[in-house]
Length: 98
Image (cartoon, rainbow, N blue to C red; front, side, top):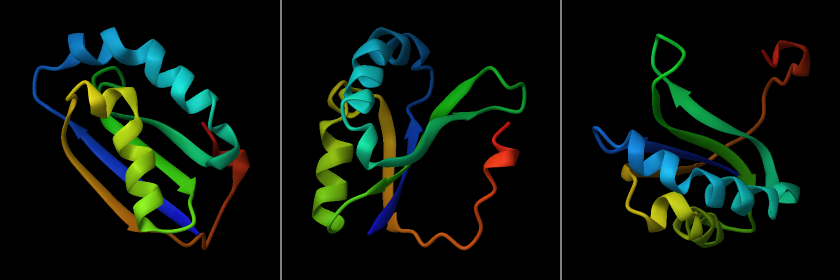
């Protein structure tokens, strides 16, 4: 089953994000077989990182929550909020992967 994980950073947390980014990337690379897509949520300037979005394959909501909770960003207290929902692919166009 696919789950979308929407994470919003706490205000003024760029230093915390950058300090834990290498561990976050390694965590995701070690689990890339479960990740459909993922990346940072950006401000309109295309630079400011506001949070993260991941769509992962997990057997159930508890496993999706565990995936999110074990992320080094989450363990470091980066996120103001984390929302996890079931997700169903309706359209997918890899050519638009700008």
